[in-house]
Length: 312
Image (cartoon, rainbow, N blue to C red; front, side, top):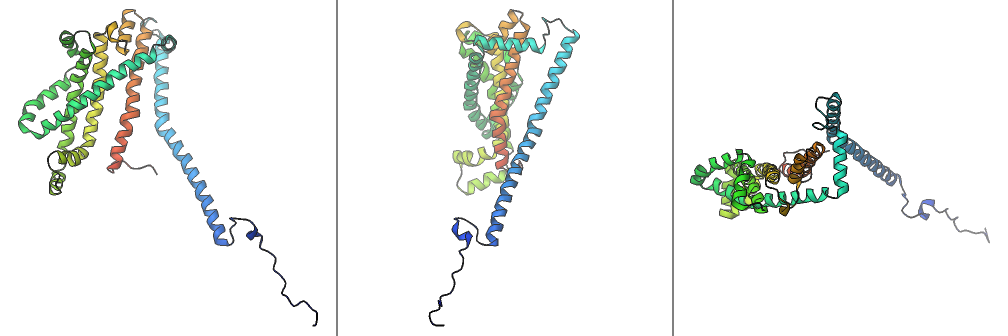
């Protein structure tokens, strides 16, 4: 028809094209829904994992501590021993608070922990090559192996009088006691770990050119790491116990004030709350080192070897 508009009518713009990043079809909407569901599922799994950790790792120790404190308080209230012999948990807590306000707690713990750490590192530096030598050379193992086992069973406190006579009331005497208590454990742990390495690993390493020190570094030590780590844990326990025995007996003002000296001062003053408070501090340091250092390291070693199942 003349004069009529023959152009086709314009289609209305799709509202989805006006907004950026807007899904344009059902598949994209399904993908978005799936992503949101996955996010919610991950959040749910994270919360479930946290709840499982709290239930399996946090709750049992808390319940055990609460039970011990309850039994302790009941025994105290029953009057089994006088208060000056067996104080209650509240008196021990007050002694801890008093030491904290005096500003001595952190310094005392730091003094003992630094001594223990330095002595333990020295024990590793001495015990590791000694263990390799005992494992590698048969005559040395025959001659030295029983001696190391005997030294490991010898109480560390027995070395304190000899160390004092040899070195006097000095830090050297304390470190000597620590080394004599820890080195046999480190060496025996390494020997035990080496004995558990399959001979096939050694032969495979030799065929690949890993001989001598290279084979020890790349084949033997990694394969023996679980047993060696067990020896290190035992070596730290011996180091810490040896240190407390040395500080308790061979303490002097010139040597600094550690947990052993605090324990001895409480005994001399007949201050039983201070004695028990110091024992708790010694115990807390040992547990902290285990939880913060050795437990994560042990889990990592076992997990990398497929011996520990990963959490889902």
